[in-house]
Amino acid sequence: FAKYALKCPHCGERLARVEANRVPAAGGRLCLAPLLAKPGGIAGDFTITRVEPDPYLIVGSGMAER
Image (cartoon, rainbow, N blue to C red; front, top):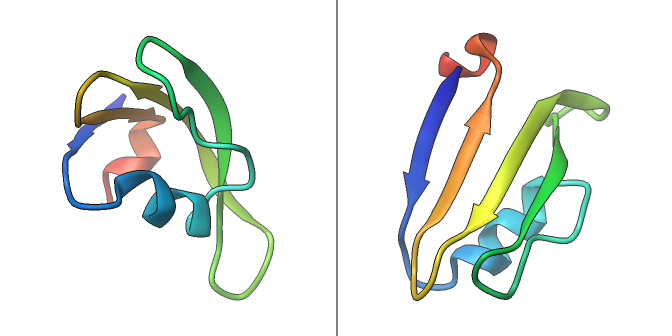
């Protein structure tokens, strides 16, 4: 699995632009979110977990490591 920790200003808003689901706003929540591809369609599925106060943990398939 590909694993990422995302910690930046306005992470939720940035994730919402590239994911086809609502990104969790509250800590301890998670969602399955398809990643949108530039030309249209879906590039892959990711599980996004909101950890308070800042980071989002993002887990995807091994193909997502690229």
